[in-house]
Length: 407
Image (tube, rainbow, N blue to C red):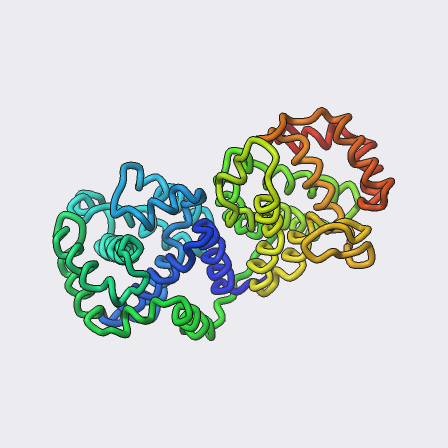
């Protein structure tokens, strides 16, 4: 299949934004500032695009709202290097994004320390520039005013005081030059950032990449790793749903290419949970109505992210359908049997099965006979596909092993 790399990067950026819950656009503001500085540095189009993408994806190693809060509320902290290492590892595994990996790896490394690391001079400079701009946005978040222009003088004073102990003096000088224009700061307001992203040069210049089934699963895993790192209770859930979905698809006689896409949808189905606060995901008890509604947002958010990737239309729908029911009682779209194809029906059942087989904060993992009984009742009530439930009932132990990663 063919995808547009720009669409993919945009979706990944939107996924990272979800981690902040209410604090959106951090990566996009850093990308915007990077593009402004790249223009002042007279970089060519390829280098400018590289910096822009690094700004968008620099926090792809972050999954918890706690770490994200540190990113935007603290100038520096012990352990800041961890998300850099995770982000670099994730990007390095996908060839089209691998050139960003070293920039991401060192984007919280201070300038004097960077001099002792064997890196190309360009990588050192770009990593430090992303660090500098990342901290501009963090300092803006620390300021009492939400207006970047109001915070301008305070931010620049702090950066000057840090001097060479954090940043390349030449890059600080470039920032001072670029930021002298009020438009630089006004451009970071949400409405203008959205406009910048919509009209940026990458939006109008397709960047197609060809993916085989193996590559598709690499892409899905990149997203899935971010979701699975969100909470100890979401860890491995996406992988379990993906594996069981593929297992059921193969035993239903679906084509190998379709099985690849179903597996990818399983890996991606819980992207929207990144926007759910950690305290709700890890809550040990019965959620109140607000908590339940916060949880119920996630499948719709998953759809909104994935549908923007041209070529992912089916995957987006299958992933978003995982809480639908054949009788129309599910969410978020209340689809009915006529609207739910076999791929969606498979993921619905795989999600229920894996969730029951997994430890959750409010209960321990359930035995296979309890899961099978639940699925049977779902089929009898007209909520679940009876033929697929019969398939599970014919090989429950095998399904259990696949769902928990033993098969």
